[in-house]
Image 1 (cartoon, helix red, strand yellow):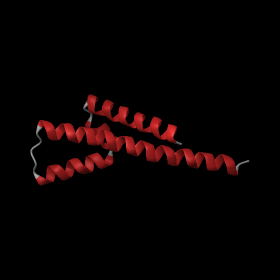
Image 2 (tube, helix red, strand yellow):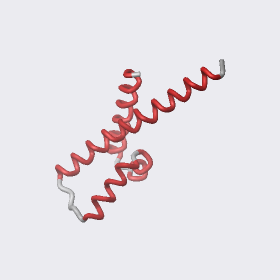
Image 3 (cartoon, helix red, strand yellow):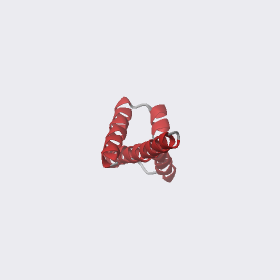
Length: 88
């Protein structure tokens, strides 16, 4: 289980790094809903982003993407394992 969590977390982190590198807002919206929610919150509060704020926000996007991939991946993995056990 730990191995799968590590693999999924790294995949999620690399995915978000790719999304940030591609600078595709539609892809970011689909890929990381909590990040889009936080961006809207920051925008509504009227905070002007500095270089440090953008860096911290991008790091937060990578971490939340990794956590999302871990959570969804482990749920799908356990569901598939339970499905294969019930079919035997």
